[in-house]
Image (cartoon, rainbow, N blue to C red; front, side, top):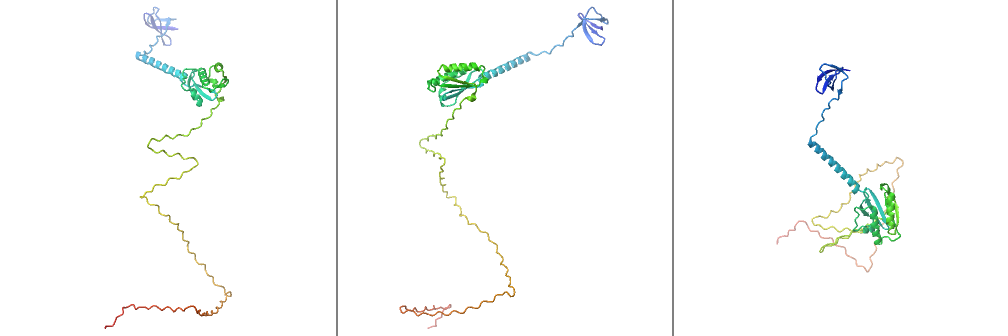
Length: 310
Protein backbone atom coordinates (compact mmCIF):
# COMPACT_ATOMS: atom_id res chain seq x y z
CA UNK A 1 0.00 0.00 0.00
CA UNK A 2 1.24 3.45 -0.87
CA UNK A 3 1.25 6.37 1.57
CA UNK A 4 1.68 10.11 1.00
CA UNK A 5 3.68 12.15 3.46
CA UNK A 6 1.50 14.96 4.92
CA UNK A 7 3.75 16.29 7.72
CA UNK A 8 7.29 15.69 8.85
CA UNK A 9 8.62 15.92 12.40
CA UNK A 10 11.95 15.00 13.97
CA UNK A 11 10.87 11.55 15.17
CA UNK A 12 7.73 10.78 13.21
CA UNK A 13 5.80 11.69 10.11
CA UNK A 14 2.08 11.83 9.38
CA UNK A 15 1.06 9.80 6.35
CA UNK A 16 -2.21 9.30 4.48
CA UNK A 17 -3.01 6.00 2.83
CA UNK A 18 -5.09 5.23 -0.25
CA UNK A 19 -8.26 5.08 1.83
CA UNK A 20 -7.63 8.64 3.10
CA UNK A 21 -6.82 7.42 6.63
CA UNK A 22 -4.13 9.26 8.60
CA UNK A 23 -1.44 7.15 10.28
CA UNK A 24 1.80 7.79 12.16
CA UNK A 25 5.13 6.41 10.94
CA UNK A 26 8.80 6.79 11.71
CA UNK A 27 10.43 9.70 9.87
CA UNK A 28 13.06 8.13 7.63
CA UNK A 29 14.16 11.41 6.12
CA UNK A 30 10.82 11.86 4.42
CA UNK A 31 9.74 15.02 2.66
CA UNK A 32 6.26 16.47 2.40
CA UNK A 33 4.43 15.16 -0.68
CA UNK A 34 6.64 12.13 -1.04
CA UNK A 35 5.03 8.75 -1.81
CA UNK A 36 6.42 5.88 0.20
CA UNK A 37 5.71 2.13 0.51
CA UNK A 38 6.04 -0.14 3.52
CA UNK A 39 6.60 2.61 6.17
CA UNK A 40 7.32 1.79 9.80
CA UNK A 41 3.92 2.52 11.33
CA UNK A 42 3.74 3.74 14.91
CA UNK A 43 1.00 3.09 17.51
CA UNK A 44 -1.46 5.91 17.91
CA UNK A 45 -0.97 7.95 21.12
CA UNK A 46 -3.48 7.05 23.81
CA UNK A 47 -5.76 9.70 25.26
CA UNK A 48 -4.90 10.70 28.80
CA UNK A 49 -7.20 9.18 31.45
CA UNK A 50 -9.17 11.58 33.70
CA UNK A 51 -7.31 12.32 36.91
CA UNK A 52 -8.94 11.73 40.29
CA UNK A 53 -8.43 14.31 42.98
CA UNK A 54 -6.63 13.50 46.22
CA UNK A 55 -9.79 14.19 48.29
CA UNK A 56 -11.80 11.69 46.25
CA UNK A 57 -9.08 9.08 46.69
CA UNK A 58 -9.14 9.55 50.47
CA UNK A 59 -12.95 9.27 50.59
CA UNK A 60 -12.86 6.05 48.61
CA UNK A 61 -10.19 4.63 50.92
CA UNK A 62 -12.18 5.54 54.05
CA UNK A 63 -15.36 4.01 52.62
CA UNK A 64 -13.54 0.80 51.74
CA UNK A 65 -12.11 0.55 55.26
CA UNK A 66 -15.55 1.11 56.79
CA UNK A 67 -17.09 -1.63 54.64
CA UNK A 68 -14.33 -4.04 55.61
CA UNK A 69 -14.70 -3.25 59.30
CA UNK A 70 -18.48 -3.60 59.28
CA UNK A 71 -18.37 -6.80 57.26
CA UNK A 72 -15.69 -8.29 59.47
CA UNK A 73 -17.54 -7.26 62.62
CA UNK A 74 -20.79 -8.78 61.37
CA UNK A 75 -19.06 -12.05 60.54
CA UNK A 76 -17.27 -12.12 63.90
CA UNK A 77 -20.51 -11.41 65.80
CA UNK A 78 -22.40 -14.06 63.84
CA UNK A 79 -19.75 -16.68 64.46
CA UNK A 80 -19.20 -15.99 68.18
CA UNK A 81 -22.38 -14.46 69.66
CA UNK A 82 -25.29 -15.93 67.63
CA UNK A 83 -26.81 -19.31 68.67
CA UNK A 84 -26.18 -21.94 66.01
CA UNK A 85 -26.87 -25.32 67.64
CA UNK A 86 -28.13 -26.81 70.91
CA UNK A 87 -26.87 -29.51 73.28
CA UNK A 88 -29.19 -31.06 75.89
CA UNK A 89 -27.90 -32.88 78.99
CA UNK A 90 -30.22 -35.13 81.04
CA UNK A 91 -28.69 -36.20 84.35
CA UNK A 92 -31.44 -38.20 86.04
CA UNK A 93 -33.92 -35.47 87.14
CA UNK A 94 -31.74 -32.47 86.14
CA UNK A 95 -32.38 -31.46 82.51
CA UNK A 96 -30.66 -28.46 80.93
CA UNK A 97 -30.08 -27.08 77.41
CA UNK A 98 -26.94 -25.31 76.11
CA UNK A 99 -26.88 -22.84 73.19
CA UNK A 100 -23.64 -23.15 71.17
CA UNK A 101 -22.23 -20.66 68.62
CA UNK A 102 -20.64 -21.46 65.25
CA UNK A 103 -17.19 -21.23 66.81
CA UNK A 104 -18.10 -24.01 69.30
CA UNK A 105 -18.44 -21.85 72.43
CA UNK A 106 -21.34 -22.10 74.89
CA UNK A 107 -23.38 -18.88 74.94
CA UNK A 108 -25.92 -19.75 77.66
CA UNK A 109 -27.34 -22.66 79.66
CA UNK A 110 -31.10 -22.83 80.31
CA UNK A 111 -32.49 -25.03 83.14
CA UNK A 112 -35.53 -27.14 82.22
CA UNK A 113 -36.59 -28.04 85.78
CA UNK A 114 -35.96 -27.12 89.41
CA UNK A 115 -33.03 -29.54 89.94
CA UNK A 116 -31.18 -28.08 86.95
CA UNK A 117 -31.73 -24.55 88.28
CA UNK A 118 -29.98 -25.56 91.53
CA UNK A 119 -27.00 -26.88 89.56
CA UNK A 120 -26.68 -23.61 87.60
CA UNK A 121 -26.64 -21.35 90.66
CA UNK A 122 -23.42 -19.26 90.69
CA UNK A 123 -22.13 -20.94 87.51
CA UNK A 124 -20.56 -19.15 84.52
CA UNK A 125 -20.26 -20.81 81.11
CA UNK A 126 -18.91 -17.96 78.95
CA UNK A 127 -15.96 -18.91 76.74
CA UNK A 128 -16.20 -22.67 77.42
CA UNK A 129 -16.88 -25.52 75.03
CA UNK A 130 -19.83 -27.94 75.47
CA UNK A 131 -17.64 -30.82 76.70
CA UNK A 132 -16.15 -28.70 79.51
CA UNK A 133 -19.56 -27.37 80.56
CA UNK A 134 -21.03 -30.90 80.56
CA UNK A 135 -18.17 -32.26 82.70
CA UNK A 136 -18.42 -29.42 85.25
CA UNK A 137 -22.21 -29.70 85.56
CA UNK A 138 -22.04 -33.48 86.00
CA UNK A 139 -19.45 -32.98 88.72
CA UNK A 140 -21.86 -30.62 90.47
CA UNK A 141 -24.68 -33.15 90.08
CA UNK A 142 -22.57 -35.85 91.74
CA UNK A 143 -21.66 -33.53 94.63
CA UNK A 144 -25.32 -32.54 95.20
CA UNK A 145 -26.52 -36.16 95.04
CA UNK A 146 -28.60 -35.69 91.91
CA UNK A 147 -26.87 -38.68 90.25
CA UNK A 148 -25.13 -41.65 91.79
CA UNK A 149 -22.24 -43.77 90.54
CA UNK A 150 -23.39 -46.10 87.80
CA UNK A 151 -26.28 -43.89 86.65
CA UNK A 152 -26.78 -43.02 82.98
CA UNK A 153 -26.37 -39.47 81.70
CA UNK A 154 -27.97 -38.65 78.33
CA UNK A 155 -26.43 -36.13 75.93
CA UNK A 156 -28.40 -35.02 72.85
CA UNK A 157 -26.91 -32.74 70.17
CA UNK A 158 -27.48 -31.73 66.52
CA UNK A 159 -25.23 -33.97 64.49
CA UNK A 160 -25.66 -32.09 61.20
CA UNK A 161 -24.38 -28.85 62.79
CA UNK A 162 -21.31 -30.37 64.43
CA UNK A 163 -17.98 -30.19 62.57
CA UNK A 164 -16.64 -33.51 63.93
CA UNK A 165 -19.49 -35.53 65.51
CA UNK A 166 -17.39 -38.67 66.09
CA UNK A 167 -14.73 -36.78 68.02
CA UNK A 168 -17.42 -34.94 69.99
CA UNK A 169 -19.16 -38.18 71.05
CA UNK A 170 -15.86 -39.79 72.01
CA UNK A 171 -14.80 -36.80 74.13
CA UNK A 172 -18.18 -36.63 75.88
CA UNK A 173 -18.15 -40.34 76.71
CA UNK A 174 -14.65 -40.08 78.19
CA UNK A 175 -15.62 -37.05 80.25
CA UNK A 176 -18.72 -38.77 81.67
CA UNK A 177 -16.82 -42.03 82.30
CA UNK A 178 -14.29 -40.09 84.41
CA UNK A 179 -17.10 -39.57 86.97
CA UNK A 180 -17.91 -43.33 87.02
CA UNK A 181 -21.13 -42.79 85.08
CA UNK A 182 -22.51 -44.27 81.89
CA UNK A 183 -22.94 -42.08 78.79
CA UNK A 184 -25.84 -42.23 76.33
CA UNK A 185 -25.03 -39.89 73.41
CA UNK A 186 -27.53 -39.25 70.58
CA UNK A 187 -27.18 -37.10 67.45
CA UNK A 188 -30.79 -35.85 67.46
CA UNK A 189 -32.61 -33.55 69.85
CA UNK A 190 -35.99 -35.19 69.08
CA UNK A 191 -34.95 -38.24 71.11
CA UNK A 192 -34.46 -36.20 74.28
CA UNK A 193 -37.05 -36.83 77.04
CA UNK A 194 -39.53 -34.02 77.63
CA UNK A 195 -39.48 -32.88 81.28
CA UNK A 196 -42.92 -32.71 82.98
CA UNK A 197 -44.37 -29.26 83.38
CA UNK A 198 -44.32 -27.88 86.91
CA UNK A 199 -47.79 -27.41 88.49
CA UNK A 200 -48.97 -23.85 88.60
CA UNK A 201 -48.93 -22.39 92.10
CA UNK A 202 -52.00 -20.43 93.24
CA UNK A 203 -51.40 -16.70 93.58
CA UNK A 204 -50.67 -15.55 97.13
CA UNK A 205 -52.58 -12.49 98.27
CA UNK A 206 -50.31 -9.76 99.72
CA UNK A 207 -50.51 -9.11 103.44
CA UNK A 208 -52.59 -6.00 104.30
CA UNK A 209 -50.76 -3.09 105.94
CA UNK A 210 -51.40 -2.22 109.60
CA UNK A 211 -54.66 -0.45 110.31
CA UNK A 212 -56.42 -1.61 107.14
CA UNK A 213 -59.00 -4.29 106.60
CA UNK A 214 -58.04 -7.49 104.84
CA UNK A 215 -59.34 -7.88 101.29
CA UNK A 216 -62.18 -10.40 100.86
CA UNK A 217 -61.14 -13.94 99.96
CA UNK A 218 -61.67 -14.95 96.33
CA UNK A 219 -64.85 -16.99 95.74
CA UNK A 220 -64.40 -20.74 95.49
CA UNK A 221 -65.40 -22.43 92.23
CA UNK A 222 -68.84 -24.03 92.30
CA UNK A 223 -70.15 -21.82 95.11
CA UNK A 224 -72.11 -18.67 94.45
CA UNK A 225 -72.34 -16.03 97.13
CA UNK A 226 -75.51 -13.89 97.40
CA UNK A 227 -75.10 -10.39 96.15
CA UNK A 228 -75.05 -7.73 98.94
CA UNK A 229 -78.23 -5.61 99.21
CA UNK A 230 -78.08 -2.30 97.46
CA UNK A 231 -77.93 0.74 99.78
CA UNK A 232 -81.23 2.61 100.19
CA UNK A 233 -81.23 6.00 98.56
CA UNK A 234 -84.03 8.27 99.89
CA UNK A 235 -83.86 10.40 96.74
CA UNK A 236 -84.70 7.45 94.53
CA UNK A 237 -88.42 6.61 94.56
CA UNK A 238 -89.43 2.94 94.63
CA UNK A 239 -90.72 1.67 91.33
CA UNK A 240 -94.49 1.76 90.81
CA UNK A 241 -96.33 -1.58 90.98
CA UNK A 242 -96.86 -3.17 87.67
CA UNK A 243 -100.36 -2.70 86.26
CA UNK A 244 -102.31 -5.83 85.37
CA UNK A 245 -102.50 -6.47 81.68
CA UNK A 246 -105.65 -5.19 80.00
CA UNK A 247 -107.54 -7.84 78.13
CA UNK A 248 -108.71 -6.71 74.73
CA UNK A 249 -112.45 -6.34 74.38
CA UNK A 250 -114.09 -8.91 72.22
CA UNK A 251 -116.45 -7.42 69.67
CA UNK A 252 -120.13 -8.00 70.32
CA UNK A 253 -121.55 -10.75 68.21
CA UNK A 254 -124.81 -10.24 66.37
CA UNK A 255 -127.68 -12.41 67.63
CA UNK A 256 -128.46 -15.32 65.47
CA UNK A 257 -131.48 -14.63 63.19
CA UNK A 258 -134.78 -16.21 64.30
CA UNK A 259 -136.32 -18.25 61.58
CA UNK A 260 -140.15 -18.31 61.69
CA UNK A 261 -141.70 -21.77 62.05
CA UNK A 262 -143.11 -23.34 58.97
CA UNK A 263 -146.91 -23.54 58.73
CA UNK A 264 -148.32 -26.74 60.13
CA UNK A 265 -145.40 -27.39 62.45
CA UNK A 266 -146.44 -24.99 65.26
CA UNK A 267 -146.61 -26.52 68.74
CA UNK A 268 -149.81 -25.82 70.77
CA UNK A 269 -149.41 -23.64 73.90
CA UNK A 270 -149.17 -25.43 77.24
CA UNK A 271 -152.28 -25.18 79.50
CA UNK A 272 -151.97 -22.92 82.62
CA UNK A 273 -151.24 -24.55 85.95
CA UNK A 274 -154.09 -24.59 88.57
CA UNK A 275 -153.77 -22.00 91.39
CA UNK A 276 -152.18 -23.18 94.59
CA UNK A 277 -154.36 -23.47 97.71
CA UNK A 278 -153.64 -20.93 100.48
CA UNK A 279 -151.60 -22.27 103.32
CA UNK A 280 -153.52 -22.88 106.57
CA UNK A 281 -152.54 -20.78 109.54
CA UNK A 282 -151.41 -22.84 112.46
CA UNK A 283 -152.56 -21.70 115.93
CA UNK A 284 -149.81 -20.37 118.15
CA UNK A 285 -148.89 -22.56 121.08
CA UNK A 286 -150.12 -21.57 124.53
CA UNK A 287 -146.69 -20.94 125.92
CA UNK A 288 -145.90 -18.24 123.43
CA UNK A 289 -147.04 -14.63 123.96
CA UNK A 290 -148.48 -12.93 120.96
CA UNK A 291 -146.47 -9.98 119.81
CA UNK A 292 -148.56 -6.89 119.10
CA UNK A 293 -148.15 -5.53 115.62
CA UNK A 294 -145.77 -2.64 115.24
CA UNK A 295 -147.39 0.78 114.98
CA UNK A 296 -146.86 2.76 111.86
CA UNK A 297 -144.62 5.82 112.35
CA UNK A 298 -146.33 9.21 112.56
CA UNK A 299 -145.49 11.37 109.66
CA UNK A 300 -145.03 15.07 110.46
CA UNK A 301 -146.15 17.72 108.03
CA UNK A 302 -143.50 19.35 105.93
CA UNK A 303 -144.79 22.94 106.56
CA UNK A 304 -144.56 24.57 110.03
CA UNK A 305 -147.68 24.34 112.18
CA UNK A 306 -149.07 27.72 113.29
CA UNK A 307 -150.41 27.89 116.83
CA UNK A 308 -153.56 29.94 117.43
CA UNK A 309 -153.09 33.12 119.46
CA UNK A 310 -154.05 32.90 123.11
